Every structure is written in structure tokens, then in C-alpha cells.
Figure 1 (tube, rainbow, N blue to C red):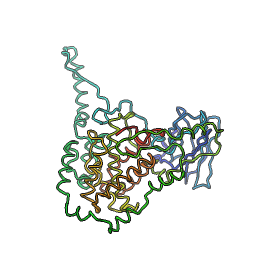
Figure 2 (figure 1 turned 45 degrees about the horizontal axis):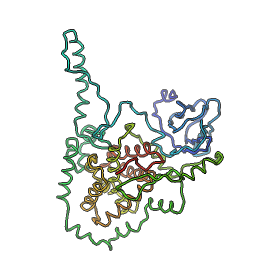
Figure 3 (figure 1 turned 90 degrees about the vertical axis):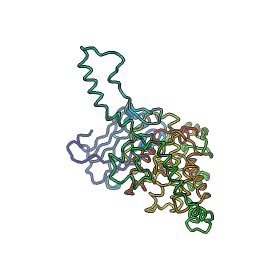
Figure 4 (figure 1 turned 30 degrees about the vertical axis):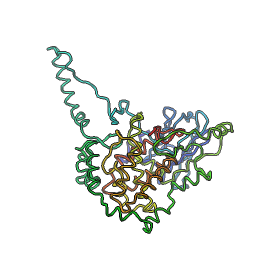
Length: 467
């Protein structure tokens, strides 16, 4: 499959593509501009009945579908139209079992890397690999085993760097990162991105204590009193009058205007407790009783640019299973980041400025202080932390406006995970353009995008947790 890449110095490029489906087939339209397409230059294979491999150097596309495909060896499944977008290859892949597959717009599911078998989540919420015991002092070592003992000591010495790394302070999504600012980031980045002086040397509890102490020092009572009445402030008026994309989506839902029917997530109104409401059961039964569809059904929630961005992200490998306590802390961190995004989005009328990356990073305890919610995964605590910062740092330090921002966060979560993914994509774009805050994508945003898309079934709430 990759022989075309072996003979070329080019690295594979993920092409732009669109998915649609009928009851019988999956249709993949792949844009391959400036490529001379022929029978010899294109290879299409299906492995393990679920994984599609498309190769036409320099383009390589691998998709993992949620269900099995039929054998395509004896069927002409590919067509090429050079007049569409500079060249379009259309693959028509027959399904082994007829039916409509959910979540074909979730790129992180379709493009998920293989999971390492030893990766797991420890009690401290940290993703870790299993550690093999290479030596023991339970039994005396005989003279005949001296050579084996030397070998064991050598193995132990080889594992010392990993053991030292495990003892360092960890942070980021599931506490998977350590020494990032020391080993990988440029000099001075930590001081520009964080308020935390020494992130690679400060554990989670010390980070929280230092943050609270810093907030106490920086709180300006006079400025807070001056912002008690902001009714005449122009930015406040604009922020309160604008209609963000999540409100537009909510209004469309009330009108019955759904771009994706029947598989959006339902969330409760209260932030402190999430439950599942099984909806659309009757509609699903009616759909199942209908004859198979022949007209392709497309997934149009995300724009083409958003779909391309989702497909271009190098998603990290996550543990195959995350326990409820870890899910709760992850959701708390997600709310923390969404609040910061909503605040900036409203004050900029949805058009980010050069200050947006600073605003989002500063208002989020996770992005500015590497906050770990493992021991306090409650919505009330997240709200307390976020609102404290909203009354200390940004332009508008008004309590009522902060409460309004939290109501908007509730609206986003209630809309479902696709709305959350759209918000995270916008955050990612803002941070990516910043010379000081781009590392937040690696530590938090990209893993969150992978987690939300891969590990949440469309018949369940956004996250299978209860706060």
C-alpha cells in the first residue's frame, strides 16, 4: 500500500474528503488536486473489514469505520472526476449489514490511532504504562545467579529515566505530561504562557495554593466596584445583545430545524448533575420500518473547513478506558475552558482579536495554572475558580456578566458534543496562532477533542458521568 511513498521523498498528506451514506453503502469523496490519477497510481484496500486504506501519492487516507464493509475486490468501487475541485475520487463502499451508521462526522473516531495494550489510567488519574518488576530482594541470590543479577541491575538502570519521570509533577489532560516546558518548549515560554513560575517543579496542590495566593494579591476592589454598573458600557451592550452560534443552534432545535437528526446528545439544564433522556425512540423505530435508503445522507453539522481541521489534527493516543472519577475531573476541566471561551467570544462578538488567546488562557485555571480537578471534580468548585478570575483579570469584571457566561456554557453543553467540538475547534485556532499560548493545544485542547469524539456514544449524554 505504501510502496508509492517509499520511492518518494514526500511525506504522506491527508487529503480533504467528505462522507455520506445510504442504507447499503458508504460514499467517500476524496479531493486529490494536481495528481495524475490512474489505475496504477491509486490503491484502495479494506483491512479487518472495517479499515479503509486509500493511497495516491502524495495522499494517504486511513479511516476506521464503526461497522463492517463488504468485500470490494470484485466490485468497481472507485470513480475519478478531474473536473471537480481539481480532481475528485469517489469511493462507493458496500456495507456488510445494511443500516445507517452514526457519528461519521466525528473525525477522531474515524482516524483513531491504534491503542497500546499496556496503557491504563491509575488511581491518581494519570495515564501510565505497566511497569515490569525486573528484580526482587525477597529471596537471596546464589552465586550461580550472579550473572542474571547483573543483567537485572542493568535493566533497572535502563528504566531509571522512566522511573524519575514518573516521580515528576504531571499536568495536562489526564496528567499525561511532565517536563514539557523544560525539555520541549523554547526558553521563556512558560513565563509567557503561564502565571506559574516553575511548572515542571510544582505539584498539583502547590499549584493551587500559589494560584489562590496570586489571585488574592491581584484582586482590585476599586476596579471591581467601578464595574458594578456596566449598563452603559458599549462592549457589555454588544456582548449581551449578540446571538452566538450555540444560541442560534438551540433556536433551530426548537423550530425543528436539525442538520443531523436523531443522534445529537441530550443534556440536562443543571450543571451539577447530568442524566440521560432516551429520546426519539419512536422516530427510530419508524425509520427502521422504512425501506432502505438509496439517496446518500450527508453529515453537514460541521462546515467543510471545520471537517478539514478535524481531519488534520494529530490526535493523541488516549487510554482505552477512563474510569468515572477521571471522567468527572476531565469534565470539570472542560467546563473551565469553555467558560473562558464564552467570555472572550461574547466580548469580541465571535471575531477573535490578538488578545483572545491571553483572555482564554488567563481565565482558565487549567490553561494558566495547570489546575488538576482530580480531587475536586464539582461544578460549583469550577464555577468558583473561574468567576474569581473573571473578577480579577479581564476588561469587564462584573459578577452578573460572569453568571451570564456560565448560563451560556450550560447552553453549549445542552446542545451536545458537536457544539462542544465546534467551540474547542475555535479555541484551538485561537491558541495555534499565538506565539505564547500554542502549547495549550497539545496539553489540553487536542486530547479533549479526541476524547469527546471517540468515547461518547451518540445515545448517551455528552459525557457518561454524574457530577
